[in-house]
Image (cartoon, rainbow, N blue to C red; front, top):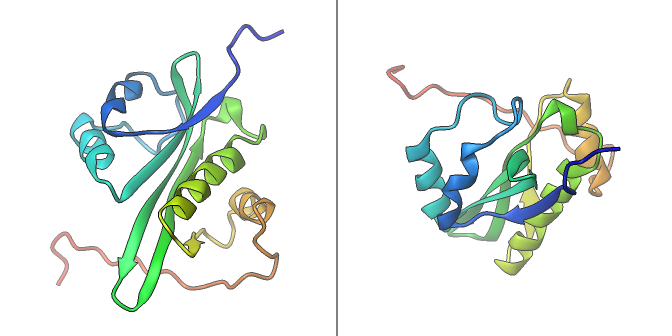
Amino acid sequence: MSTATPTRTTLLGPGDAGLFASVLPGVFDGPTRPELIREFLEDPRHHMAVALEDGRIVGFASAVHYLHPDKGPELWINEVGVAPTHRRQGLARRLLRALFRKGRELGCFQAWVLTDRDNAPARALYRSTGVPAGALEPMLYTIRLDGAE
């Protein structure tokens, strides 16, 4: 029987940078940086939902509230990560739903997310939130901006 407190999900705000002092391995791609955490959390168009257990971040999903002159507001899901020890428990779906609620509060008419075609776990996650199995498969190009001309 686990002695851990139940995992809860919450949206972060500008005063929540201290939560990043305890993050389980495998949640983020690499070490988090305090200056970027503060900048992210202070930007009103950036949103992050986290899963917390015993004061530790065990999962997250991040999004950007995107505006464009000829469209309504949209929510762009940037990334979802859950510690390997906490996967397959529905946390990623709960985190996405928290971001979807925030997007609706902001008047977003849709959410967007991209993943690699061979990322079967991510594709299953997105289908579990209502994305049809035959969803569009757009192409994504990564263009380096650090000196490439």
